[in-house]
Image: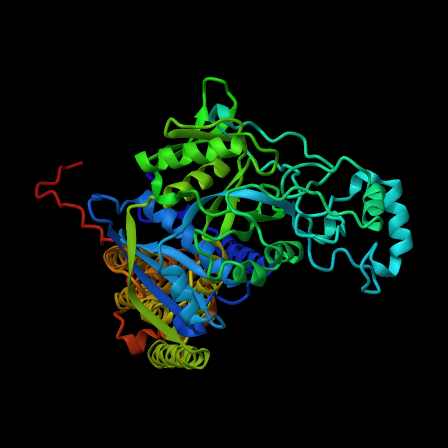
Length: 624
């Protein structure tokens, strides 16, 4: 049996076209995903697109040790993100950086002063009694196509008829309507209809009952007469005997009017009603239920400050298998305050037996009370899922979060300056790429076509991946990242040069091109892998130990280094194998870059047979 020939690996080089097809399919898939996602350009950072970048440094509260941890920092990020979104900002970015920094990047078009005021202050958490609650609808929801109110003055006769036919669909007159005029529910009258957001606290608070279709006055007393009878009462000139609201704070007529016209679906309105609010005020507020529907509230003065919550945690009720719940523990002062407010609310009708948990002026939950809770501990339960329970627990915890934040730096970049920096970066990249191409063409001639094609594939992969990373991990291309991409041009070109020089060395040894390509690859591969490993290691260390925009440089450098390995292995090498079979390169054309004469090649290596030795001559021949 003949021994197998050494030095040949037919399996890896028999069909290099398959490898090329593989990487081209991957490139087409990434490009298609980019267009399907709707993002065809990389997400730009603040220094290129313009905007405000705020760096906050966490500090422990006096007497609190080890408060700067991952849980507290992530909770702070969630709260700050909600604040920034409350400004009506789109595409804002709030993220931790290192162990004690939070970076807030707000794009152009945002009031920088207002943004700094929002993100730089401690969260305000209060427990306020609910005086009135009603689903909020857009301001134009109750108007017909002609802009007239449905059931209003222009349709008074029809509206009165409908009211008489459907006595249960209207609200009773409010305490502030001294003339006894009643509006329907859509016009903004307070309602006691519970929602699924009203969840219970321990045994004193139970799930909200089925929502009632009969709205009530702020006092919680449902109307016991049809609307038609109320209209008769108005016609008789009788005084409105609807009881005044009796929570801890009584709303004025002006506040009730504000409540009636409040549109919580408008972000600007939600921001405006938070301005100048004090804990001791009776206020209007907005809150969103678990179904994403906005509700509007009249809330009494704060009874418990969120700082009195020592701890809050989302746990699963394993004893009764009732689902997820949120447990709270109050301080000594908070325990007394919470016991007092729950005792006051326990005997009232809905919605005045509810208390609103208010974070930064927005109602995040409104459980209702059935008995006083004086033990200093409470549970909020209901139809929570795990995420909802954790979100509420984080919000409650933030009121007692032992962290404050110091504004470390603020950078505001105009859109014009950002555009100039982006233009300068692109020009620098184009100049660098042009110089590399000129060098490749001048020195490697025909081989430069392979290098340029490889650079093009590398650039396409880098562009599509950076574009897709924008919406997925919020990667933003900043100026240092552009510098990293420019440096990567040289790193990628260096890999091609290493391989080409190895091939030339083999040609100088007298080998033909096809065996030279295969023999040069193992040595070039080792050198390329070692070089790229060192570059990637440097990028990884730089990314870990630095903060701020330098991480953008490190991330881009590491990404392009990995892509360099992919391109060299799956594109450059297979393409070189295919080109070695072409006459232009195989014959050593003077413009191929592989001309044996120009390279000073030795004569071709040829195997020669050994000359057979002459047969030994017997000095004593035998006679026949």
